[in-house]
Image 1 (cartoon, one colour):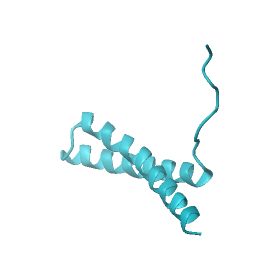
Image 2: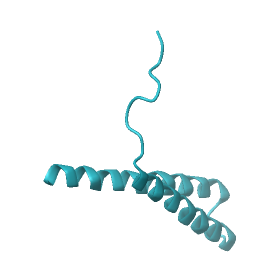
Image 3: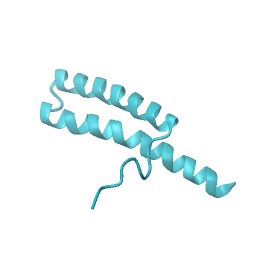
Length: 70
């Protein structure tokens, strides 16, 4: 039994842009919050992961809604 390769959903270009933008914005925010002492370094990683995963999910949801409405 072999695993299927490259099957399933992948990010669209707009989702990749949202992922990179969210990654850099959340990384900057996490660095600022850690430097100010408001956030521990361990929790900053979670903020960056959410910043990378959240925006593409929102863009994908918006695109799905556009396809359903039209």
